Length: 267
Ligand SMILES: Nc1ncnc2c1ncn2[C@@H]1O[C@H](COP(=O)(O)OP(=O)(O)OP(=O)(O)O)[C@@H](O)[C@H]1O
Image (cartoon, rainbow, N blue to C red; front, side, top):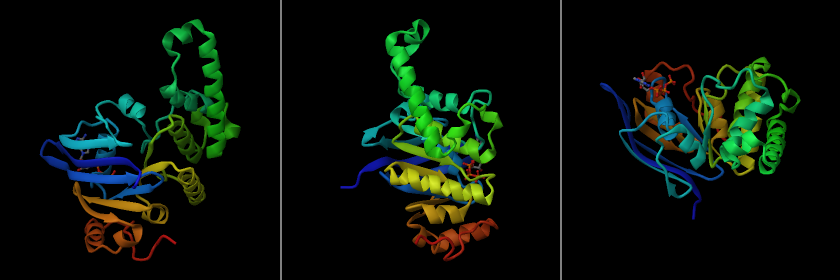
């Protein structure tokens, strides 16, 4: 039987007169890289914000690793096992790269405030483990040499890697990446692709919103396409980019990143 990590169904969200999402659902299996695409304003970010607790949906059901979860608050969602990155990088700019990852790890710690104040033995051991794990994760995403640099001094591509390391630090069931390639140059994109591939090989599960359709088509196992808040196609990259509705949706929006037939076909 398939090992389902995320199963959401019937998500609707209205902003005043605008129906941003209408009855959208998707199912993601463990180890998949799952893409969410669609023209500008299709509802991708709204969907991300709903499943990660930033927006309250008007309707919808949510299951993470077989258990129902209510995305009512961001920290609850992180504890439940979804970690995310943001379209506009949200790091602690004045903290070091290492400290940024350690913050992510604290979602999973136990000593609590009193342990921290009195620096109990348990707290110190936990801090040691957190630091060690954070260093491993910086190594994993390829920026270990910048561990002690302030986050704001890192290059754009490296800041995105740092965000991913911080997300991984929470030991998530699902990592939701919101436009990870935005603003990256070609070399950074190649490195990002390698990193996402490595994360997948480690049997982690990724949900990806991305404007770079070539990247999505090359990386994802399955793709859902939204248009005007509705799901218009779901399937393998190969099928989705040949779907008439998808082609029409992108052409209708005069989108420069339209999924041209054959481009980025999964090997
Ligand atoms: N907080 C909000 N209040 C009102 N309208 C909103 C809000 N957030 C999103 N919308 C509207 O909902 C629709 C879907 O927006 P959303 O940002 O989810 O689309 P998107 O697919 O992520 O677009 P893009 O690719 O441009 O980032 C848009 O028409 C947008 O203007």
